[in-house]
Amino acid sequence: MSVDAPKYHADHIKSLIHEKTLPHNHGEQEIVPFIKETLSKTEDFQILAEMFKLLDDFSRLRIFWLLCHCEECVANISAIVDMSSPAVSHHLKLLKTAGLIESRRDGKEVYYKTPDTPICRLLHHGIEEMMEIKCKNKD
Image (cartoon, rainbow, N blue to C red; front, side, top):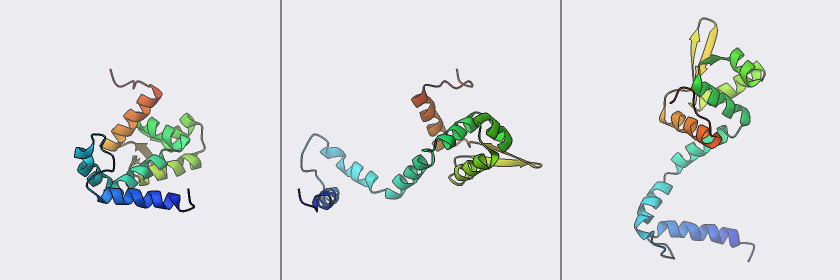
C-alpha cells in the first residue's frame, strides 16, 4: 500500500456515496437511497456526536442519571456524587448548555433536573439498559 492509500480509500468511499449502487451486491441495493439520504444529514450526526462526547465524562454521566430521577440543588448533587460544588457546577453548566438538563430558581436556591424530552428519555433508558438498572419509579 502506498502512503496515499487512506486518502484513496476515503475518496473511493465518497465516490460510492454519490453513485446509486454499491460495488458489491449483498442484497441491500434497495435501501441505498435511504442510507445515502440519512448519511447526508451530517449536522444531525454532528449534534448526536456532541451529545455522546458530553456524556463520555464519568461525572457528567452520573449527574445526568441522578437528575433523571430527582430535582436537586448543587449542594445536594455535590454530596450525592461526592464532588466539590464548583466541579458539579461546571458539569451542570455543560449539561444545561446542551439542553440535557434544565433549572429553576426558588429564592436563592437553583434546582436542576432533566427535561422530559425524547433525547433525555432515550439517554436515560440507554444508561439503565447498559448498566442493568431498574428505575424505582417504574414497575
